[in-house]
Image (cartoon, rainbow, N blue to C red; front, side, top):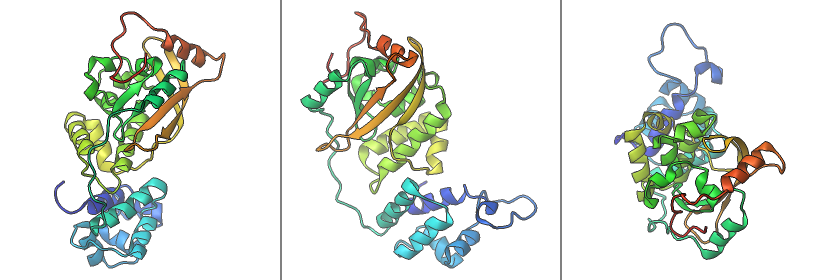
Length: 290
């Protein structure tokens, strides 16, 4: 893991996910020792020499031209977030990086915390750039059963998904959600993969979760956006909720996440039950409204 550059590791990981037949090459006979494309195959598809591509993948060449980066992206069939990530890593390898910034603030503005309460009974919460749970309304907190077993500073949605006993049981399609979560962290790495909060979280998950370690090595990239999640909640049962993710301006990557369901639907009824308070409920994160 310490050899080469992040760009080289990305290229190796993505090369290993492309079959020859996917890009119009003959599969050949016998067992291939290399998963996916060989270096010489990718170099040919991208129109560069095998020697140049090998040096690029091994970190000995660090200044690929925009044309070479575009050709590699096309050969690897990258698009969207993954293609954007390739260009970011090429810039990183060339030393075109912004000055490191201080760690992200964990304080949530009072106006945002007030907004969380106005959204009830819809679950809503605020997360940091690495998915630390910074504030939540009551249904937003109860959406993750058992997360209050952890101290506030460890309440992280990705950590919960991979390491909490309830994490795997909460999501109906855990494998897909887990892949999206790991790909989101890859996207958050952006041009600064060594930012301390990301490095600390990823290091913990790689060591403690074989599933996360496998997904992290795939180098899939996915920006967080809206969609639908199917929960199997131990208190209120099955819920299919749509969600939206909105950036909070003038913060270092904080995002507001809200969930909804059609009125008078069973999913909306389950959401209402989730909002019902109980006297024994654990304390909300610091700064969250009751």
